[in-house]
Image 1 (tube, rainbow, N blue to C red):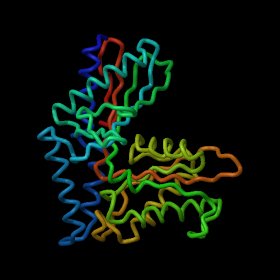
Image 2: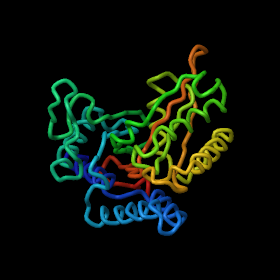
Image 3: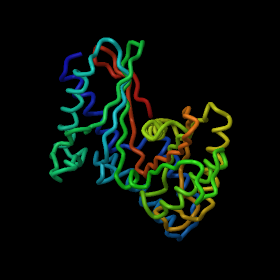
Image 4: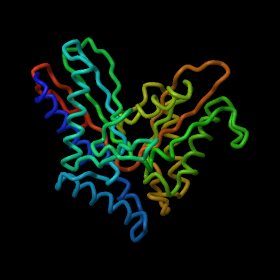
Length: 295
């Protein structure tokens, strides 16, 4: 596959991610809209989200003005080098910014200057993993700043919450994060939660949960039950979409666990806004897209 073909495929991936909501999220938003009571602000808010989703796809315009941090995961086979992929992806990002699929979002933290093309130290974020397969798998998410601002991390035990080093302590941390985020983060939200790990891997692992389907079932039975109970508990708080009240505070909770050292017990909560932008594809060495991952 030549560089121009790869760049074109990646540009289309960025466009779809920015402008088209994945089907599992469309179903979740529709279900939430039907669930909210007639003539309430919550019903109205969910209706605006439904309209926004349709318009963005029709007009090929971003679902949200904040196209967020660009996070890319690549399962890389032997036929492509990291440097080659990175160059093609960065060129696709520049073109997507020029076309308006991405907002000019990369700001120098020291000078405050915007690069204007979404490139700079740490921007975009690319994670590479080797794969023995023949196809390359590319997944991206666009993580908005509002939802990132209400992501958080706890260290157990937490005396303020009365949370110990157990799953009940984890539950208290997650519900506290939901309570603190109310009215912020552009809810209804989706949570990615990592139990354990260190401070850095906790955030990475929590955010990786956003690549899961909303409708999937955790392979760990304990975590699966906790996901379901946390979703029900959060939606019983009455916070509702955008903090307007109602029964849809969260659309999903996804948990994972990582081993920890005895001295530390972290609970990391990554928050995703309702504009749940993630997509991906499998692409062969000849440039053929074999499968879109979230269709």
